Amino acid sequence: MSSQVISRLKGRNCRLCIELTENQSSVMIGSDDSCGKGNTKVSEAIISPLHCFVYLHKKENQQFWETYIQDKAMNTQKYVTYVNNCKLKMRGKQLLFDNDVIKLGNNNKFIDFVFHDEYSKRAEEKEIEVPEIYNSRFKNENYLIGKGAHSRIYRARDKKHNGKQCVCKIVKESKDVNQHTFKKLCQEPNLLKSLNHINIIKVLGYYVETDRLLIWQEMMHEDLDKYMSEVKSVSQKKYFDISFQILDALKYLHEKNIVHRDLKPANIMWVDEKQSRLKLIDFGIARYCDIETSDRDMTMCGTPNYTPPEIYHALESGKFHEIHDLYKPAVDIWAFGVISFSLLSGLGLPFFNENEVYTEEALKNNIIKRTIPKEPLIKKNIDKLLIHLITERMLLQDHKKRITADEISNAFINIWKVLGIVDA
Ligand SMILES: Nc1ncnc2c1ncn2[C@@H]1O[C@H](COP(=O)(O)OP(=O)(O)OP(=O)(O)O)[C@@H](O)[C@H]1O
Image (cartoon, rainbow, N blue to C red):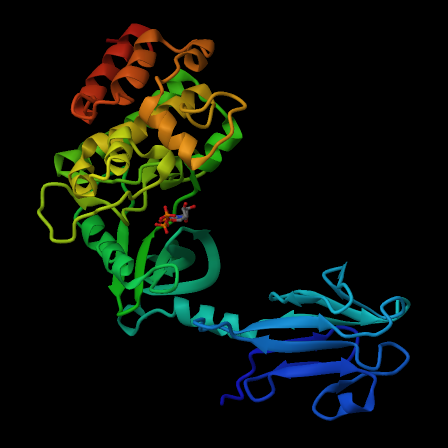
């Protein structure tokens, strides 16, 4: 068994420092003599004879340790245990997190500790460790800037460019990312490496290990999801500024027969705080749609809110073998239509009426059955040609007749001319 420190309670107003290891996996804190032997004895006046119990726990099938604190005082009127100023109930226990503040006392006098989760810190250090061959190029910092369903994004430095800030996206095979998913996600850097477009995130380097994938990318500023929650809706001019860039990236991808498959505001980011240039990120599930593969998708991928009706139809009718072939460019266009509607209307999704309760079942039904409402766009004085383009051509149920990125581009130019945003 290892005697490496797993967690530590360090006194703030006393000299005590309690360390838990695999050998010493629990400790009773109290004023009773028994707390002197292997446990932790504190002055009688302040805390109860057996005041609280701190112990390590590793759940079945889990690789990591957790530390809990449990109240043990008999007289909870007199003796109290606080975690971050919240009083523990009699016999109550609580999971501790790094930097939690623990106060033990008799209501008048307290001893204070800060909890240090050394195990998680070491695990994080290991997770962000730069592989040797990239040591002279990148430095990863233990500073988390984003989290996805499959990855964690850390701040990093590119030593080749004077330590310029960049990010390192790390995917780890784990209980959330099984081996099959991990292998699929490992295709992201290869695909991204083959792309070169001003509105698509650039890969600076990548490394694949048996259970860890690291991708260094340029650092972006803020995603469109956050931006939309701040501005609510945008003007037609701003809409064109934004959507021309997304469309340009989609045209480029679709010409190469690549489908992004997870287009959504969270995967579109401003390059910097000027909020003028955007880039598409997260190509984790992007695919070439013209290449035959033995690994055919039999279920939905991407995000339900941006998934088109053809996928839900296939799922409903149990035609799982058709799903793979349905992930064509038209899937990205549908998502682009949903984003367009939200940007201009300021509403989250076109498939729900105001005050309607969101459920996944309702979402699926509404996407399949509902006509896209025009009223929210009319209310915002959006040009009727643009309304028609979004609600009837991008968000068209029949994916075979749905408008293409190229056609949208031409339609945009016409609408620009009509609106007089630029000279013809
Ligand atoms: N290059 C970047 N610069 C700054 N922040 C980024 C960058 N890439 C990703 N992020 C942040 O991290 C979040 C997660 O990234 P990403 O979407 O690539 O992860 P994911 O695990 O593939 O996500 P998903 O949940 O969509 O599967 C993004 O929404 C964004 O906020």
